[in-house]
Amino acid sequence: MKILETYQNYYFIGIGGIGMSALARYFNASGKKVLGYDKTNTKLTTQLMKEGIDIVFEDLIDERITSLQKENTLVIYTPAIKTLGIWDYFNENQFEVLKRAKVLGLITENTNCIAVAGTHGKTTTSTLVSHLCKEANLPFSCFLGGISENFRSNFLYNGTEYSVVEADEYDRSFLNLSPDWAVVTSTDADHLDIYGDKSHIEEGFRQFAALVPDDKQLFVRKGLDVGRAHKTYAVNEEADYYSDNLRMDHDKIYFDFHTPSETVKDFVWEIPGIHNVENATAALAILHNLGVDFETLKKAIANFKGIKRRYTKHIYPNGKIYIDDYAHHPTEINAVVSSVRTFYPDKKLLVVFQPHLFSRTRDFADGFAESLSKSDELILLDIYPARELQENFEGITSDWLLEKVNLDKKEKSDLSGAFEKIKEKEFDILLTVGAGNIDTLYDPITEWIEKL
Image (cartoon, rainbow, N blue to C red; front, top):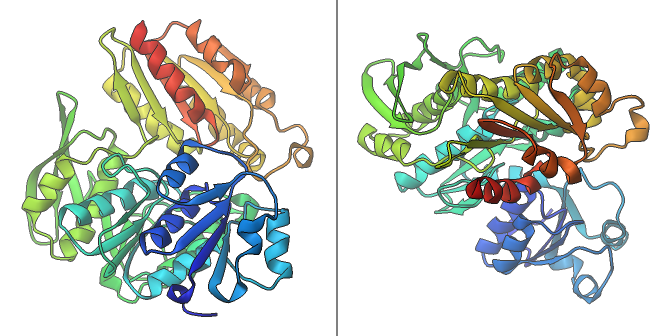
């Protein structure tokens, strides 16, 4: 394959995906011609088009495609794409066609790569590492799985010496990377359609950890086994790097950070949840080892605004609270609900949840039922299928899952009827959770609660 930079044109099949769009933005920022296809127009694709990227939403072989030459065009695709005429055209005409993960891996080969992996926590941690790099003015580019509230993108270009990458375990994509530094936040069972069982996903993370050349540049949450020597981090227990003395004052969280040789008191930020302090601990450990001073890191932590759809919280003058979160695994839902219960123990919680994938719903049904039962009232949406077909998962439905939930006040809804159901409910806190298209409820909900 030719060197990436020698191509003039980059065509993305599935350009609207969060990982694909970051890559598209990278090549666009590098002055290349970027174009692509996606089946749906979203806020993200609209923004990409505003940035000068040419996107189509129909599977047609038009002049924009036929004018491309295989000698100077690289085609990049996501595994979510199964059948597509555009895909067939590029293959039949012998264009260079590569998976997104492979291309990202090639980019990391030529940078000092900081890769953040984990079944939970990787988006927040990698976004925070990127934010700290930006505040310290390090020469870096980042490729994230969420939209940073600080720079309103999943990509930022501030140089090429470092790359910050969210290392995705799905389809073993993270094994394509060349990490010089790495974080492993969690290795819980997930993506069992790929790995089969928990032991195999743990083996995948061990293979990822083995890619890091130096034990001192691998940071692993204390208690996880990655099969090699590493530095540990934790919250409220001693580790190589740890945070403790957590306390809350006027919606701000304070904590102390410990390195092997010193303690730095009174970091402060507005991101709730013990799990997020844990993510901050990993990010601080990395940046401290890159030589960034604690004064800079304190300021950067204090002005970190978080990630869209990661505990995005609105507090209204009428007393209502609305929280939107991407949680789509029982562990993640537990973390979000626990944070709500910790800070607002006496408020009535209405949860609206959209399961993501039939396979994940099947594999973790009991866990979902247990975590959802911690709400006061539940509206359960239809399962978002993504790349899967209902016909391959007979009997795995939201009605089936709802029966397992131990709540008096619970009901099922399709997405189109969910907003009207929400408006009929009494609640103090509304929590919408899920990784599919439940985010389409966000704007109507915020506008409605504002007017109450």
